Length: 337
Image (cartoon, rainbow, N blue to C red; front, side):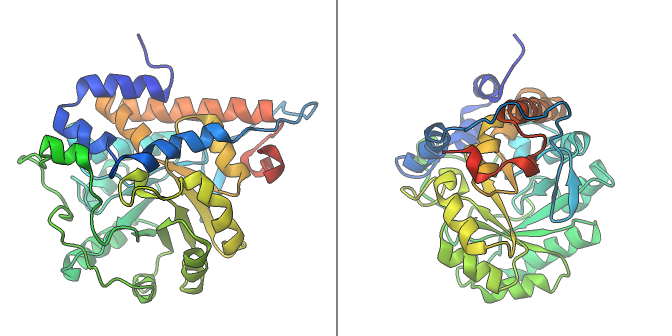
């Protein structure tokens, strides 16, 4: 039976992936309280539809940092995609291009920035930055991304150390020997001295800098003060510090603190088009999806990722119409409780 939603893809992916890969992609930190709460937060929020509104023409299109996208959903940076499918990040890049959205490439990818650019020439793409202890490794990757027309840098700031992911511990998770990782993050090799000043260092590459991993008003204000063009409200999919707020619950606080100085995105727990609308109503410009994407990748490679994006876009379009909104720009705080 064909998958009709993201949950179907998740079940199919669990059947297809080996135990090592599934533990890595599915798991969270500690007791996985935050992992579960990322999903539950969307259930707690209720949409407030308006009726007798002209929705004869509904569009899911929007812009992110000035880039036109066909839907308010980006592909989140997700490591080790060739563990899910042999084509890995190249398949994801092609699918994102076909869907008309932005792919974010992880530092810990199994494809180099130049390979991803070649797989989807002309498509919009961002590069996610982990600053490694040997900063020259990070600089080499950023320079390759800049040379290959990546249009923004996403600095992940919630990872001075990897979280304690007990599914990985139980399974004795290993990066498969046949895979090459662009930036090796699995040996505790992060620059643990990273500070807000480093946003200005990244800004020196001439691209907008987006800060991913913000959960508080205090850090949102600091990100803006240090030149961030965007912030991603994210708890790393519940994979870092367990027991923090769900991304959705932290969103309004961050939006209020940013106060229009940067674009706000949300990452974590998005499985439905209605989830996207709840995030937009609470002030997000768009959302990022990681697990939803990787389940599609595991099941059917490029076509699986594209189908996940199409399903979500169809759900967003229908939900917009039923909510009484002709476009993402029409969704407001009044549409959610």
